[in-house]
Image (cartoon, rainbow, N blue to C red; front, top):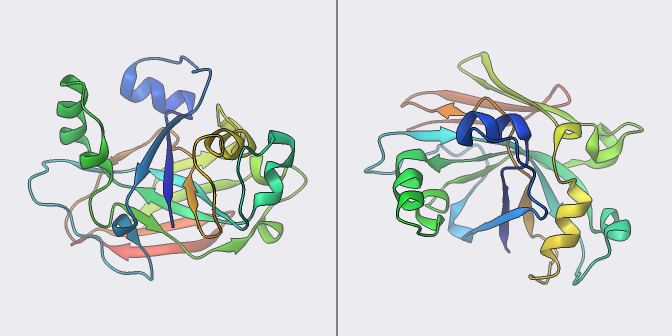
Length: 208
């Protein structure tokens, strides 16, 4: 099982972190190891050594069949379940790695850094707009801290699936984090996080 992530896929988030609204020609892709997966309402443990660990709330899709070099027009056939996930990022580590021109795996791929909610059949939550018309949000301790709408993606889900399949053979069970909108921020000990997809709570856990 692979965990793939997409960076800088919402213009407003790019502006808040990088002071840029630039749309890259191709999606920015990174990976997380399978040990990063956090499911089943298990608590998230802030890694030792980071002074700021940020939540990044995202729509996550799960691959349902084997695929390689998938044409974009057929990409919708390769997923039929979605959920909300948190791509945790050790922001201070990320800045240091970026300054030194190093890869991001340490700040993005540590244990538990890929929290994934309950899977929902896409047909149950998507309207006529399909996967590109889904609303999601994150609440911390009962207050909304981040909202997203998949229509605001710079690269669509089908574009992402098609693009990554050029480099990685997609297999049943692989998951793709599709990018975070504006509003990221730090978590703190004893925070309670809840993720919602079209008003349906699909994710909940505590920070330890």
